[in-house]
Length: 279
Image 1 (tube, rainbow, N blue to C red):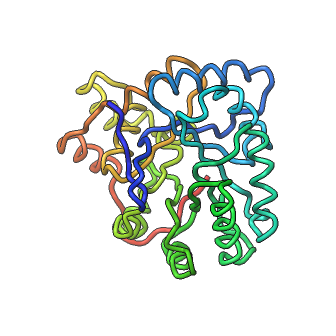
Image 2: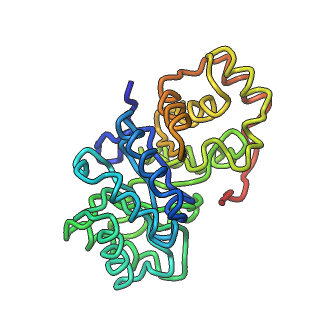
């Protein structure tokens, strides 16, 4: 089953994709990482997320090898450093990413986090890239509600397609205001690190209990949880075949009310506004 999410203009994109943070950093692992991405594509995870920051461009170059001959099947996401997100800096950074990716367009181009260049300038640069056919959509990452409101207040700000944020059962602060706000705008979020970092979340007794009922793993339950609303794109990373297959199969898991209640009890939703968690 291929689950999809609608962007604000109605385009359907895969709800479950592949992340590449910390990939493209080691020549020794390159072939393994390429093989993992290729397998993920075969299993339907055709949305691939990266950034110019990842491996200092190495992730984009590695992706180029993994997707050779298959570009038109994919929805490619990349991100620009905030210090490059000026009126002239963003187009130059985009060209470098296009060159590393061996493609003529990026499907979704994100501002990696809020920076010092005026947002209006970044949005103007993104719109110019869109008009030139270099990118199809643009969005942001690591933006909280107040910053999202700033984006949408700008001319062309309503074209923002997504906000990529840290989201998993241990990191639920966005549910208080950012997630409802994005839902009201019919804007999906992109959940990065859906299985957490360092393995702590995967030791959760609640996730283990739910996983047992579904004959699944705690990681699969965490991914299924991130997809439960139908308004989130989840981008787990995997570099070995077993994990790739595990991630892909998580898209078939539909959590029940009992499952969600058990997870809520152990990992409660926020009761008040919290600062945006980032990695």
